[in-house]
Amino acid sequence: MKEVIDTVSVALANGETENVGNAVMQEVNRTLVSAGVDEVWADKIDNLIVLLFIIGIALLANLICRKIILRVVAKLVKQTKATWDDIVFNHKVMVNVSRMVAPILIYIAIPIAFPEHADSDLLDFLRRLCLIYIIAVFLRFISALFTAVYQVYSEREQYRDKPLKGLLQTAQVILFFIGAIIIISILINQSPMVLLTGLGASAAILMLVFKDSIMGFVSGIQLSANNMLKVGDWITMPKYGADGTVIEVTLNTVKVRNFDNTITTIPPYLLISDSFQNWQGMQESGGRRVKRSINIDMTSVRFCTPEMLEKYRKIQLLTNYVEETERVVEEYNKEHDIDNSVLVNGRRQTNLGVFRAYLTNYLRSLPTVNQEMTCMVRQLQPTETGIPLELYFFSANKVWVAYEGIQADVFDHVLAIIPEFGLRIFQNPSGEDLRRIGVKIEH
Image (cartoon, rainbow, N blue to C red; front, side, top):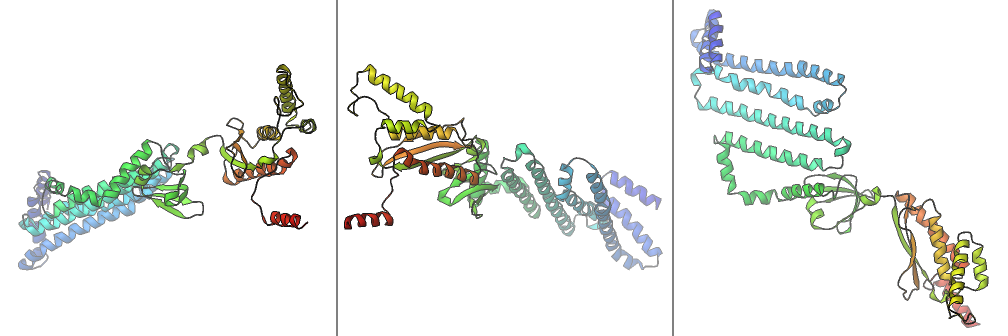
């Protein structure tokens, strides 16, 4: 037995698998014969016994890795303060490593069971099957490792706004493409370079098959490099029915959860070729814009009388404005020797101008309005529906519900205060208006 072990050791050291097989077979054959087995039968079953022994050793090694080594690693992982190792272990990275142990042992040791058939096609085919299985498990290991790395980085604050999932999917596609090339080359017993050279002629077909993936990958890089889009952004793309928050950016799709909780999927390249509105700038700024107008009936606009000015002076938000403006008007009229007996002469305050000043001061007095951003009240082009008076300001609160409440409160006040300035809102005649007109006609 000692001679056999020495022979096997020397042969393994020199990489002579066939000599190892011969030595092992001789020892197995000798053991079977000494156990009373006929020499003819011993020659027939010694290969099978060695093969079963190799498979048993491989399965035992796999069992030791999964039941002992992996459990020890799991306990060590739980004891560490780092979180990345927990994520790596949970994504079955180590499990895929353990799955490679048995086929690697079988691939290395199977020639020992058939030393007389070392160059046979059957043995070569069996070894190629083992090698294909090893490559397949290795690909799953690398893919699981990529997924674990993605999970680790996606939980870090500085990477949460990056389209990492698209990069992960791209890396996995490239990985499995390379793996498929290697596996096919093993099956047909050709070099991978020969296969790649042949695929060069089919590049147009490959580009057609992977068109969406290629365009999605390029678009994902452009979206990330230009900081155009990231998970968590609120985007609007009416052409495709998207109006909500981006929840996922992958290689082929961008998923948007709309405000009605429906999901819209958009190919990334459409976000590059078409226009979309990203509201993230508003969310990162100091306020959310309110731009809304009311139509004033032009027939209600007139010059202010002394009685009207006296009334406006009593409004706290207008006291300083009325007094200062009236002083400027009087100085101007006096300087230019204006005849005040005619209203059209000189300068006069109007109820619309005073109302506009009141709204400006009112907006600047509200804590719900961002005073560091643009805040104004302006007239737009008069139309057949009156003079549009537009309120343009930014609410300090950007949350949708609060934002709607702020602008509703402002316009509730505006609509209620308009009659105090002798102005009227223009609106198309309603049923009540027509009824009053009919009553007047009857009388």
